[in-house]
Amino acid sequence: MADRTVADRRELERALRAEVRGGVDFSPGARALTTMDASNYRRVPDGVVAPYDAADVAAALAVCRAHGVPVVPRGAGTSIAGQATGTGVVLDFTRHMRSVVSVDPEARTAVVQPGAVLDRLRDEAGRHGLTFGPDPSTHSRCTLGGMIGNNACGSHSVAWGRPRTTSTSCPW
Ligand SMILES: Cc1cc2nc3c(=O)[nH]c(=O)nc-3n(C[C@H](O)[C@H](O)[C@H](O)COP(=O)(O)OP(=O)(O)OC[C@H]3O[C@@H](n4cnc5c(N)ncnc54)[C@H](O)[C@@H]3O)c2cc1C
Image 1: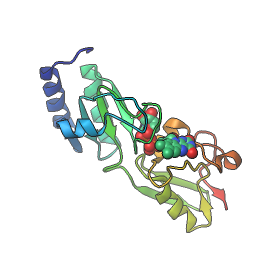
Image 2: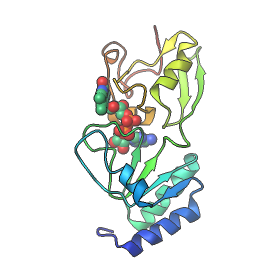
Image 3: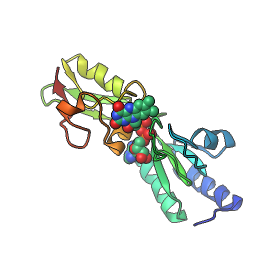
Image 4: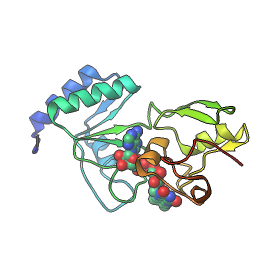
């Protein structure tokens, strides 16, 4: 669906509300807040969905696919090239899917939700003398999902690798 009308957007919102348990917000405020990341690019989405869990993500994707609407996942929105913005539906992982689920110090692995902030993972890993190697300067805000999306780096990624190429934990 290339040029969506107001009626198209209302139908999309209705369908998302029927299928998604998390937040579905097509208000001007919610749309305005996600028009930008940390770049000069501006793209106004149709609406914002804040899924509760993976099943909610699948439900939102199914609705958007049926309506031919593009989807952009979004973490903290600190990207610097417009890649956290889009004209369709923005999936906001920072509201409900932001937990560090578990850290296994023996296996040196962690289970996180995509909206978990890097510093929360570092706090949890630090209890075991571990950390997560890649450390963008936005570490107090950026999310693990956004870091993987960008394959983010940082001063320690030189030694310990980037999200798509490193193991999840490193000794201090
Ligand atoms: C001042 C400043 C300093 C920075 N310093 C660094 C730095 O040192 N190193 C560095 O690498 N970057 C840096 N960045 C860029 C950015 O902060 C990082 O890349 C950060 O990891 C992005 O995380 P985010 O949560 O903000 O992701 P977002 O900007 O929200 O998203 C990033 C990308 O990932 C995708 N995405 C988000 N969540 C998901 C998901 N759940 N599933 C699939 N895709 C997803 C988005 O669609 C987007 O394409 C900096 C930015 C600023 C403004």
